[in-house]
Length: 195
Image (cartoon, rainbow, N blue to C red):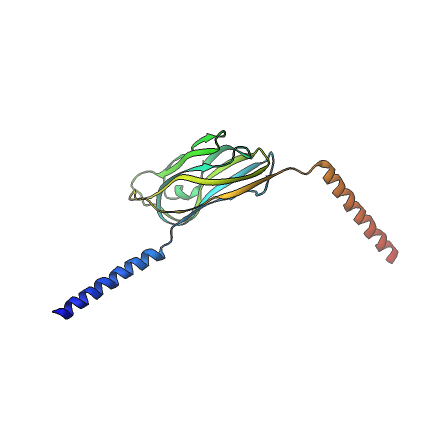
C-alpha cells in the first residue's frame, strides 16, 4: 500500500511539473509600436503602428497611448487588419487630448461567438504631427487584452522614443550642392588630363 502512495505522489508531482513547465514555456504576447520615420522632420506626419506578436486567441483589446504634446500632436487613428481577420469588429480610435498628450481608451473587439485571432499583426495605426523639436516617449497605459472566453491575456508592452529634428536650412543644401559641383569639376579635370 505504501508503494502505491509513493507512485501516486510521483505521478501527481510529474503532472504538476509538466503543467508548470508548459506555462513557463508559453511566453506572453508582445505589444509594441513602430514609427514610419524616426527621427521625423518637424512639420511632417508620422504613422505609428501598434503591433502584437505571439498572441493566442485575442478577442478584444483596449489601451491608452501617452506622448509629449510639446513634440507631437495626435491626428487620428484607424483599425489594423489583425483582429478583423477573425470576423466583424467594433473599433474606436479613442479620445485625443493634445493638451495632456494622450489618446485615451482606443479599443477593438470581435463581435459574436467567434474564436479569437492568433499570431502576429497590426492592431491599430495612429497618425501624429511632428509639431516641436525634441524627443517624445510614446508609452501604453490602461491596457487590457482578452481572449474569446473573456479572460485577461497578459502582455508585454513596449513603447518607443521618437525624435523630431529640424529641416536643414536652404543654405545647407546650397553649400552641399556647391561642394558636389566642385567635386564633379575636379574629377572631370583629372579625367581630361589623363586622356
